[in-house]
Image (cartoon, rainbow, N blue to C red; front, side, top):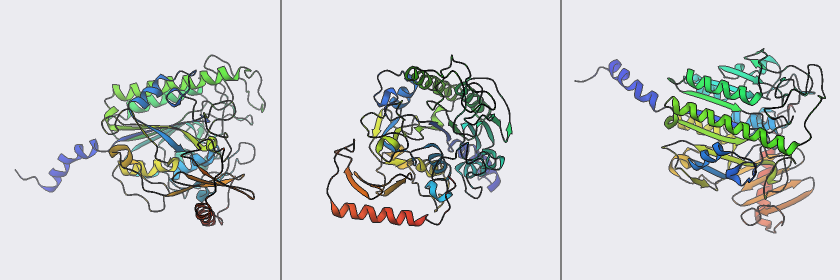
Length: 425
């Protein structure tokens, strides 16, 4: 029997819904390239992250857009280089309480939410302290967490002594260890939204300071900028923090399985920048805040049973800003031509190579352009070119005037494209 147009649409709606995947984006804070087991760490136990990698795709050449917190998060939200939204540096608790990600920017939460996705963020925002910049004003239907760069894991006091735990755009104190609270709300959200598509962003706090394991106590009080009683055995606390985050990931994956959502959910894990001196960036040179690979090459894993081949790895160069267009592509939505990122879906689902491109970093103290294995670094008047395929540790600059000139010109043109945009940090 031939269906009338409306009847045909009703029949097709469940099929269309089933084709729209869920997204869970998990971002660690200051986690180094070699801080977890599946990236070579031998002392920190991360069985759930290791299982995620064993069941999905491990990126060996994934990069944060910035070498510090706020810039990378701005690039993730907008799918564009962070300089285009004026967030070139850290939005600090001490000096930037009235600035944030401009509301005229279109976030991935706004695009997906406008297409019928339930959206939520649980954890760290760091893109504006004032209520006008709150995540619920930027496309997220629900927010539980903190807006600053870090909080006491127990008292949820920021580094300037302010209370900083929110429900939407209102302060809402909640007892518990930050990592546990993020996980709890994530599991709840998954259960509550199992019958409709959702996008869940989980920016965890570990292993950013203050260094507090789940068995510790609060060290900051309201109005206190310094805090008292922080642990001296930082290496042990650091390990405990990462391992507790890994346990949380296990609970989230279990919630997806128990609600029958695993086959229709893309899970992506990464870090916002490289580790500081308390973590491990493996063979990479440098650390958080630097233009060297240790500042911005980070661990990353994509997991989507039935769509991503299990136990695979890729050497493709990808950046945080690529997640926005990837989610749009996977959801069958049109890409905004203003995005700088590219969709990773052909790589994830079909193992197709990514198109060649030149990508850039600028962290104030240095800038870089990368094309294929070539990385050009400009720091003051000092120019260096590295072949990362032969020198991942950036120890031996090479001479190739033609490539160096091409990358320098590309870097200059990129900087010129945002030179007139005031940077808020």
